[in-house]
Image (tube, rainbow over all chains, first blue to last red; front, side, top):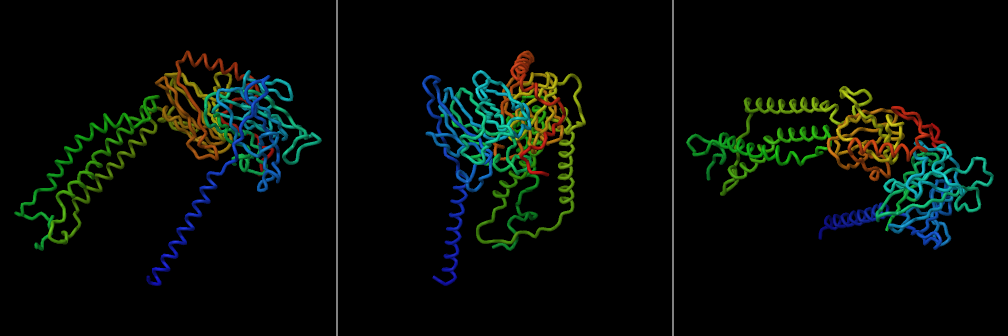
Length: 223
Length: 290
């Protein structure tokens, strides 16, 4: 084999290896996703399944070293808070959801989303009080699954609250508790998202955590 | 071995009159292809007959396909003809005849193609205003406005959801688009954040949703059916999920449905801003200062 042929072969092999590595990196990036957390069985008294979520103003370095200041959801599994926005619930079941909301109000761009929709009874409980809507300007986040017609506005913790949470997990800090139940219906892969422009420091509050899986949006897998 | 080009017609050489023969073949091919394009392929092109505008678009596509048929037939048949009759004869590679200018052919080519392109341009421009805008977004001041009663429906886009507001029914806003059959609908399309695009394919309506802009489109549904509304402008991470369902129902069913929505969505309607052609929401408290 001539020297030129050897060089050509070497360069070709190096390019091929580089191409494969780039391909693997892109594939790994494109397919990476937070873990899917399954709903737990609810107490026999209520029946169905239970999903417990938390919203925080800053996820903190413990859960997200790369974006510690981003607003985010968390989900509870076996008593521990997990940084994920992918959930699974059984089909054709009643799902009881509790959301502990630790963030302050931002306000809705579209006040229409301040009404509760898609829950059993068309209502939710905020700190134990049953409501069918909240003040749009006091909304901190929403938990909305458009394809299921499920619209849940989450009221914010008053700005003047003394023990506001700095970083997740926020247990013990000032919060609002939102509870509701919905019927999961048929199997499917549904996206959910927050409709409040709550991404601090981004244009109109719409970038960063609003556009990144694992923070203010994710999937609800009905299985 | 001959020194003359193989395909060059020569007087007394027995070469057929290719021009005449191919013209006849082309004419026959076009006569066969045209009815197939008009009556078989045309109805399959879409978007269907869900509205006057959709039917008009289907007609336009069929007309354009029919106009293109003779050209396509010419190209394909000539390709086949050349492969069969202008093949390189066995026995060696021969130089073809020199290609020189032919003023008559060149002039005809330029005139014919120019006429075809200009005709299609005129046809397309005229048809853009047919059926009251052909189902497209015509901006805040459409050139043609249909006469008679119209149902105004506002399409509000935001990342990543379409909602629909019915100003003549107390300004109620819904997540489902329901329209009465055989009723001219006047869509007012706008956005609360970035550029989206309201596209109900089956109805033949498509209009950009720009923040601060009232983009008007007219459509008259003519068929009781379900349809899907999609965003047709790449608008962020959930663009692919920005779709929802719509229905065309009888006028009576529409009245029943809209009154149910007014009742069910009263809490939200109470806090909605007064109906306007556009909405400029307050900058978010979280947004970067501009």
